[in-house]
Image 1: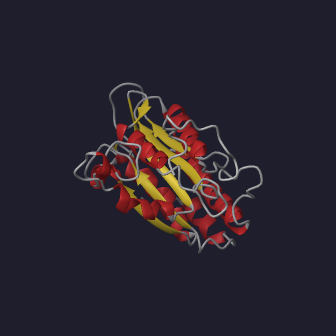
Image 2 (image 1 turned 90 degrees about the vertical axis):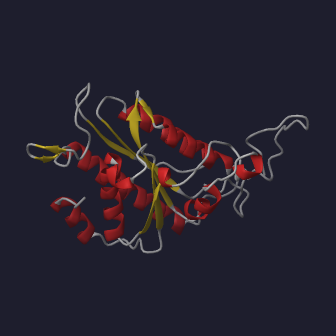
Length: 252
């Protein structure tokens, strides 16, 4: 999806060097073919802003892979014949910016999005060199689309999950588009005046603000070397884990 004139101007006027930042977007559409995904169209706006600003961007269409349910790093070790998560993990681990994108179904994020969050959680026992969650120093945002209400609710649950894992959430780190209540066109469907939603100023503004805030905060954290580990070093914190119980927060 092409950027608006204002979005192009913001990119051209940028003076901050983002060239060493990496971003990954994960589209949790239920469509197996990414070309059929309405959510993909809105993600592409954020991706294009980042690329034009020097950020290296990779895209993952979750349904193009077999990411099975589970809370372990490799579910083939727990009864599944195939699990693509281990080969996708290095891309997510190496990214400074993560954007989760989901359609709304029955007022909630997609089932694929929940699986993705659970697989992120599966890696939460991994620590960085400072003894912190591996997600410390990384930033997260979310893109939501649908033709009924639910954008803020889905953003709330996905962003809560990311911050709980250790991602840092900048201001206004969500954006989305919804149509009228009831059956109707989805984002990007053809309408009388062109693709539905492309001219929605609210959606374009929030997508732009989210993307720039993600880049700015990622820049700040990278320059600072992440967070100080004073008070948040999990290796130094002897949690009350019971030997006879498996604590999901301490899988390492």
